[in-house]
Image (cartoon, rainbow, N blue to C red):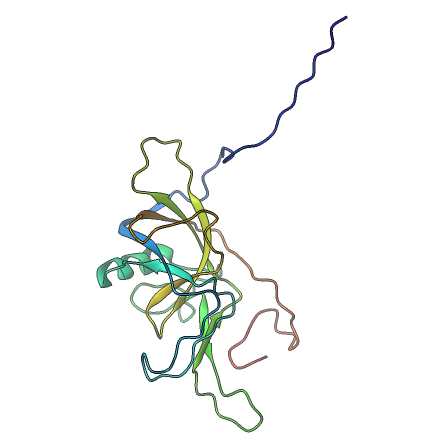
Amino acid sequence: PAKTTVVTYQEGISGEFVDYFAAKCTGVVASISYEGANSIVSAALTGDGLYSYEMNSGYYLGSLSSDESALLKKCLGDSDGNDSYGNNVEVYSWDYGSYKIGGQGVGETYTYNLETPSSHPHAIKLVSTDAADDYTAGLYYLTWYQSTLDRFVLINAPVTTTTATASYYVYATDGVVERVIVDTTGHGQIIRGQK
């Protein structure tokens, strides 16, 4: 008898049966900009001190107008699953996915010169605006808002080469991402001012 061998392997992007990133952020078109891997931005830019490079790939959502940034904040909404009054901020009722730290030496006051991702960054999907059909896959990223520079930092770098001219629609999820941390204080999450 003849012997038949079937070899199956994955090339490219696999399909999805459930789209957990179905909420298109209306009115938001972003590019992916590159500043430099794990770079620290000098205080000369804003006069506010240095900024965190923790969980910062050097890439961020670029080309956002102030209106698009506002629409994106509203679209992202809650990141930690707690949408109670006082937990979410600003008129957009959203979470930054980050917080400010600083001056953590013994006897120092908190100067809030550094920003870092919180326990719950945002998860997004970017889909090319040039997509010719419904089968063009999206790119998944974790992001947090760097308020001192007014930008959305990408935690993971793009897997393909991107250009500053490529543009993407942004899709959000109501799912919750939880960052794994070493909980030295026993709070169960990262707390402002705690190491």
